[in-house]
Length: 231
Image (tube, rainbow, N blue to C red; front, side, top):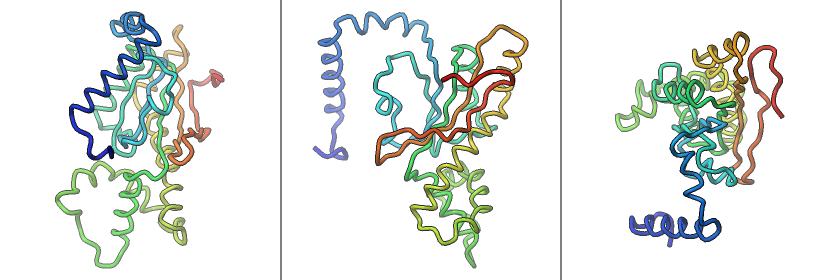
């Protein structure tokens, strides 16, 4: 049955089938992970896009419950005034003691395409002064990145829509990693690495390719001064 025709009972049935299949392979699976549910100890915080095609569980299928802490939103943004994301980050770093935070973008990102469309509309003659009311929330959410795109429009001239979006997907991840490095939580974690006995927290930028299923490292990792990038 097509995905858009799936019914609520099918979702529940699929879950029951998955649980039964897991138990068939490992009868102690859920009992063995009870301690993780009681006191999770993830090694990674994944900050990704809300796109339904990009799930950390599908992209990295060998991870177990309790190993990856997750925050997702439209176009994998990290706003310095977004208490939702900042509270997730603080909890992951300060309480759960994650060792790495990864910003994960993906090819053909609809949020990036929307920011590009908004940027081009502002540059067009007689452009509307504001987006339609129905898109106001999305426009506001993407505004910081849209401003970045406006400044990059001359560099995108001559590129196809797909090429422009792909280039901006990389730009977006790099911008969010830079934002992440500016947060108080990361600054404090790096300071503690220098003054206290705590493991280094590293931040990374990846892009997931919908056409290959592969993650691409943008090689923009940052960590506390004096630490070495873990292999």
